[in-house]
Length: 526
Image 1 (cartoon, one colour):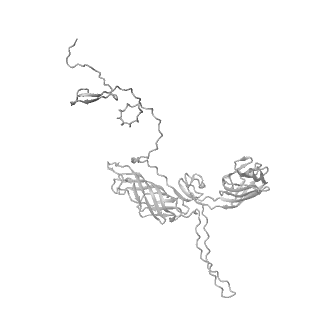
Image 2 (cartoon, rainbow, N blue to C red; image 1 turned 135 degrees about the vertical axis):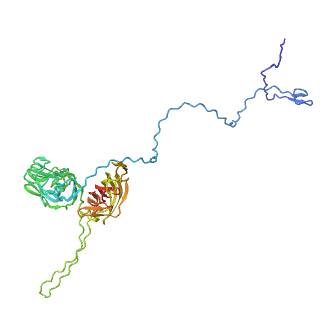
Image 3 (cartoon, rainbow, N blue to C red; image 1 turned 90 degrees about the vertical axis):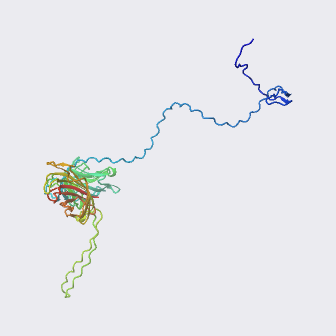
């Protein structure tokens, strides 16, 4: 049987190569020349020794040492992104960064409305009890000095009250408000005492069994304090550590008496009976009065003393300084001439020696002094305001249009103590930028923006009553002022400035537009 065929036909497939095994190789010898490519087993090749059959497999040999690692393979492709994890907790706030640079300055705000000019003060000199005063009148006044009395009382078997009581200078019947200070050591035995002062105790008065009421039992003269035991009243001073009492009733002690109670909490009475009038303090010493300056904040009836409303203190006097040391005694005068006769009259006394030099000034706060030109020296900060009348766009000597503006000057004044003055500051005027006159003319005001000014050749004077003048050497009338108090060495602390009339520049005109009206101000020592 057969089949027809054409082209190329596969006869066999899946060829399997026999595995070569050790000892499976045979040996051949060429018996003649062998052309290239003639494999053994084909003449002229002849087998010399045929390979035997493969023996049984031997046992596995020991595993050889691990070879060196091969080179790292190429990086595989990046895998797909994993899912987003949960949000972590918020971290701690970082430190504040340094401030950024300052931004540019903003535009200036609009000017505020000008305030109303204050009312000037009227200096009236020393206070007079017979004179009524008006609002803004200013006076000087020295109230009565305090009086200090010495207290040295004994009572009971071993009790005592020793020290001082100081009043406000009131003469006659006293109220508790007239007692301004005290320093009293109270004792009920040689080993038990306490000190009462305004810091730990208070004075009180009353009638019969009711406290907190005035009475006429305690009174003062310039030299003595006395208590009268006739009206059923009582006075005392008490603190947490003890009490001293004088009574014309049985409220402090059983009988009418004076003494102490419960010194340092010992709950013991120590007293002596009393009657009539008893001297409590002696040797009254009057403090030197000092002069202060007061202003009336309303109308003042005659006899209303400064320190009582509507008077208000403007400048308080300092405490008096200690007295300076006495100057040395002057040299002894020249003896008089002897008489011509041995028995003649005694010659005239020699002339008095010259006075010794004045002792040095005392220390502490200076005694009030009469103001002089040397009292006003140093640099003072000042603020001055006035109302300016002006005219503009007018022919010389006429006033086609006029108006008013507020003028304010702030700066510094330097006084040299010899009458010379330097003033420097900034002058502010407030008027409309452009004004249309009734005749249709449009013109600019005579005052421009704020200007810096400095005087040249200004002078000043100081009067003994604390008033004075300043001449700015600019054609204006002098400015007046009142001294408002001095420092410890007599230098003026402050002044009140005012100007009360027009300047002397003549009629207003286009070339001379300003006329000054009343103005006020203040200067304070820097």
